[in-house]
Every structure is written in C-alpha cells, then in structure tokens.
Length: 442
Ligand SMILES: Nc1nc2c(ncn2[C@@H]2O[C@H](COP(=O)(O)OP(=O)(O)OP(=O)(O)O)[C@@H](O)[C@H]2O)c(=O)[nH]1
Ligand SMILES: [Mg+2]
Image (cartoon, rainbow, N blue to C red; front, side, top):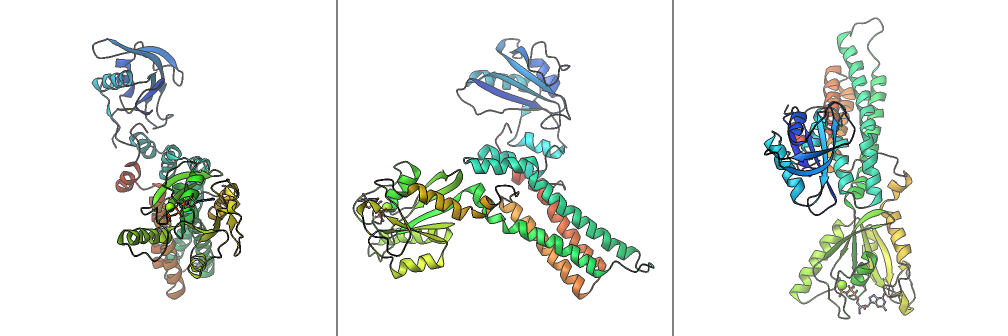
C-alpha cells in the first residue's frame, strides 16, 4: 500500500483570509519539519505558531500548524495541517516548499482513500464525506452526516452478520451431516434467509427516494403553450431564468434550475408547451418536453384557472406522477377540476405548492424523519440488488435441492456483494470509481 508523503490544499484556491494545507504519510513529519521553523512533533493536536520557509530559507508566511500522529488522524497516517494566509501566493509557495521537502501532490480524494485503506472510514462513509461537501440543501447534509456517522454502515454490518451466521449454520450442516442432533433444520435456515431478504428489500425500496435526495428531485413544468410555465419556473426559483412573453411557444429548449423547497433539494425543468405544432423547431422542442416528462420524478401540469383540464391533460395526470397546478389565479378564473391555485404575479399559492411538492416527492424520507440510513447512490443499489439476487438463488436451492454446499455458495455471493459495498474487500477498481470525483485536498 502506498503511504509516501502527499500534500495538498484542503481549502478552495483563490482569495481568502486563510488556507489549509495537509501533509500525510510516512515521512510527512520530516517534510513538514523542513518547511516549519522550530517544528515540534512532541505536541500533537495542538495549534502551534511558526514561520514557514522555502528550501532557500526565505520566510513565506507565519501561521499555525497542528500535528496528528498516526493512527489517530484523518488518514490514519502521520498528518500535519498547516493553516496559512489565503490568496494565490502563500499557499502555492508553501505547497511547493513541501514538494521540495519530499511530499508529492495528492491525487483527488487521496487523503480519504488512505483513510479507507487504513480502516478509519468504510467506503460508504467516505462517499458521505463527498456528499457532505457537495450538499446544497439541508436535508442532503443531514443524510450525508448520518451516513458519515456510520448509520448505513451499521445497517449493512448487521445484514452481513446475519449472512455469516447463516453460512455458519450451513457449514455445520456440511461438516457434521451425521450428527446425532441431525442437521440444522432447513426451516431454520429458510427463516434466516427470509429475514435477510426482507431487510435487503426494505433498503432497496427506500433507494429511489434516497437517490432523489442526493441528486435533487426532477420536477418538470409541463402544459399548453402560454399556460404560465416559465413564469412559475422563475417564481419558484426566485430568479428570472426563463423567457416569458405573451406569445405562445416562447420556450423551446428546456431550461433547468436548482433550488430547495423547505430544505429538500429539487431540480426544476421548464419545457416547451405541448401542442400540435406545425413548425419543425416547435416540434423539436415538444420532443424534448416529452423526454423530460418521461424522466420526471413529478410533473407539474400547468392548466390556467378558468379552463377545465383537457382529455390529454387528464391523461398525463392519470399516467404519470403528476400534480395539477392552476396558474394565473390572480385573474379570478375558477378551478374546476381541482389542483393548487397559484399566481406568479401575486405570489398566491406558491408556498402551498412548494410544501405540496416536497411532501409528495420526499414523503417516505419525511415519514422516517431522516432516521433511516439511505442508499443514495446507484453503486449502492446495484450492489444490494446483487445481494438480493444471490439470496433468491440461495432460497431457490434450499427449496429445490436442499444441498447445503450450493446454498452456502449463494449466501457467500450475497456477503461478497455487501463487502464490495462497504469496501471490506480491497477492490482497487471500486476505490478508483469512488474517489475519482473527489477534490484534491480531501
Ligand atoms: N395575470 C397573470 N399572467 C401570467 C401569470 N403567469 C404567466 N402570465 C402571463 O402569461 C403569458 C405566458 O406566460 P409564460 O410564463 O411565458 O407561459 P409559458 O407556459 O411558459 O408559455 P410557452 O413557453 O409559450 O409555452 C405571459 O404574458 C405572462 O405574463 C400569472 O400568474 N398571472
Ligand atoms: Mg415558457
């Protein structure tokens, strides 16, 4: 395992009051000692004031440094954090002094990767570090923090324990088939398999809303031309992002915007109005609208007040996850056919609409009060689905052949899928995928 000293900026580059630089690895203390005047490794976890100097001995900056001797550090290795003045020059010069002193530049996510390899974090916790950094809505940050705390890891650990226990029962059956007590009753193994399968299915059933939480729910504004979609899009975002005119067919390309409703992350997409267009450009826009409709977590079907929804519009409401929104409520038209009445002019109904959307899209997350750990990534879902399939195979073997060796084989497959998920097995390829998207100082 590589543990050569690495160094990187842990804060964003650019103009700032402070910047933090990390050095980690075997030899990190020596490298730091060459840059930090009067370096002391004997006062760990204490912020000490010092002058930082380059290889020629010229003073670069004066700042604080903290020594975290391994294994009680973020990476599990010897680690030093230097906090210096921000801006472009001082941090860059300190980094280059550290390079001269023997520390190479860290690759993206390399600090966290080492934390995983040294058993400080498991893989799903490491991903939570990334999620916490990328969170834009409070609910996302809460979920990431819970995952970092180990909520999901514990849940997966319990599953794994049950699987290993089942394997144990099967092994007993294989090793001592002729025991006086007789083999372990198949019913007991079947019950245990059913229990694990239940838990896997429960976690899988919550995956879509967890992924929605991580990525933001896709809300697609759809409806006839001039229904007020773009106006509503702008009002919900609180910014004039899409063009609004009194001419039908204003929007052609879909426009996306991110925001959160009551702390829950959403991606809004404004689309071209749906109608039987003759113009080829309009028709292309409508094709885009249809693709968005198909991908939406929730369609916000905009129908003006004072006009009852048409058959086509009723069909969208029936066939898709959709919410009926009655636009232009300030004009005083009725809301025959129901829906939430809103006005982009007066602001009427917008708060109610935001709440209704958040409750509809994140209902199960809210019901759990965020307490359930979430499988927020496609990687989690595929690994767990594989465990589920292996368990189904194990069950099938048990009921058809009752051959303990074959059943045990499938149970082990399920365990292996969980191991890959939390990173128990050192699968370099999985690590590359997970850490490829990290920032350099993490
Ligand atoms: N009185 C009133 N007028 C509105 C409201 N929302 C939109 N309008 C008007 O309705 C017209 C169409 O609005 P848009 O938001 O462009 O409608 P759209 O659905 O995006 O239209 P297309 O992009 O052409 O499909 C504009 O003249 C808006 O000023 C509203 O809440 N109240
Ligand atoms: Mg529009």
